[in-house]
Image (cartoon, helix red, strand yellow):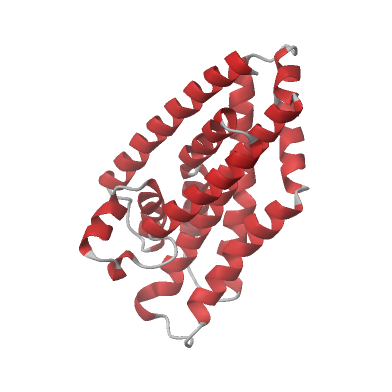
Length: 240
């Protein structure tokens, strides 16, 4: 399975669209959102936005795993995998590991922009903890992308993943502070996995431990998306 993971990681990192939109876009948006209108860092906005945009990059990379799954299904790669000694569980786990690995460049690029361009200073343990939390915390979104990939065609998966990314990013407060939202939208935002995903990282950046509510909400979404991925794989196995 290790060789399979290495193969999938190389395929993803050679994808120009992943490098441009998965890594470059979050960095560009972060620098624009935090530098237009002056250098004032009101209320630690540059730090909070850095974590939120790193979460946005992780979200896009994680969902993008599903597009690869759908493309593999279309060209018959999944059928070929079924005749190898690998079990279905190893195939799914391998895909999830691939998605987790490809999350790292997007997270690292935004954190580097925060440190070297915006001059954000944190303790070493905070940088490491934020990177690890955003890395492992992206697993629910990887499972959502895999579920979409097994259930939908390649073209439809791309459209659905973009829609999921935009909706979860905006409502989850990854682009704008939730304090600017009306009350009803703020309440809805608190239930989204992306809001809690970013909140855990922002808590670490502020030097405090993540709240149990944030961890619990993200865990529930991980269970839901994991169930969706398993059901989608079983459905795909019956039809492909």
